[in-house]
Length: 314
Ligand SMILES: Cc1ncc(COP(=O)(O)O)c(C=O)c1O
Image (cartoon, rainbow, N blue to C red; front, side):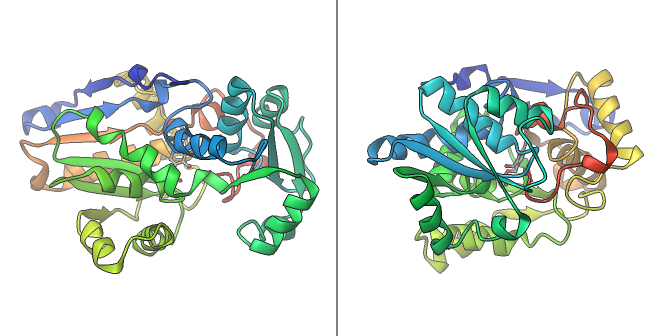
């Protein structure tokens, strides 16, 4: 295997109130898999790349915003495997020097193709894919955020790496990770925390499952194990507040847990609030999946405030 998921340890977190209630809080540290192909990224790319290898294609093309964790992970994995890569980047005002994520993608050999927002909006359209195939021959196209059946089954593999648990919390963007986790569950509950305002988790998950040929009955049964927590987007995708910054600081200093400000900090904040609110978590094991994102959204990255990631930076 290219990236060793054995690096992804289980970290126990002690919070006095939770300890007193007999709650075991564990973090699955997928962020430790690799600094660039981190968190859910290798999970989503693993079978996608296997599928690419079985195709006759010679290069991988994918989509992302200027701060996309997925673009960076694809560039890095392709570089390590000797696969040429192309990144279609949202916003033709950008250059490879716009920010550290794009700089690094370029350094890793990814060909960056900057397109207008109007053109980027066509990223799921078959006709647009045909156009891209004519411009870049022999290309395997990977959806934005690695969203696909192959992405999902890679994420399913996280479940057998976990100790026995009752509740699993995860951040949501495209829903690929949460759909994959759901496939691996037996009796446990999956708690999804969207980082996007007004995100319809059930609808998004249903649509992703339907595209992967799951039938309505099975989808309904799977979704019965999901609880959606919609109140932790902090104003919307990539929006920040002083309270969130303070929380990131607290986690880093008091819990020895670094979180990114776009996905994992919001989801972990949601976990803490939900567990505080309800007795149903007493004497249970609660797991948080750390989905990475620290390169683009870590507290070390300095971004001018008018250059925050947009919704399509998945
Ligand atoms: C760090 C991080 N966490 C969570 C997510 C959300 O995962 P998904 O898009 O599979 O719902 C993303 C986006 O892909 C991400 O970059």
